[in-house]
Image (cartoon, rainbow, N blue to C red; front, side, top):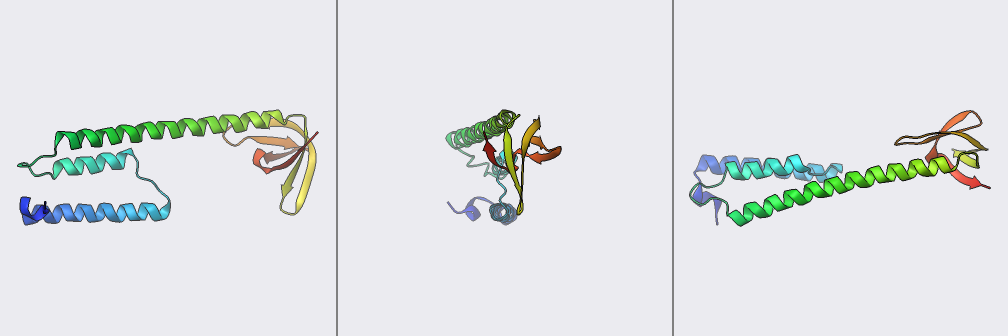
Length: 144
């Protein structure tokens, strides 16, 4: 169905302008590594509802399908958040396991060797070796 057959010229122009803006935002988001989120999805759905032809409204099954997609997006967002928290917890646990062990830490071309005397937990765990603090991720080797 052609949009121009069901809406007047002003409405057609407004919808095309919104679609162009959305497409620009979408292509910009893909180039910058950003993702469309739930707010973007709701904006699109709201725009569809506001600009639909009153004589031919959106089908119930189309609306239900879009709401199901939104629900799936929300669940995937929750799962991703849960995985991030789990990963942070696992990294923190691994950091605690090196307490009292000898490690090698590489910083550029220099290597530091020493015993881990303290561990600071958090989203980026830190260890103390030879009275210096390092990120856990800087450990190159763990020795017996």
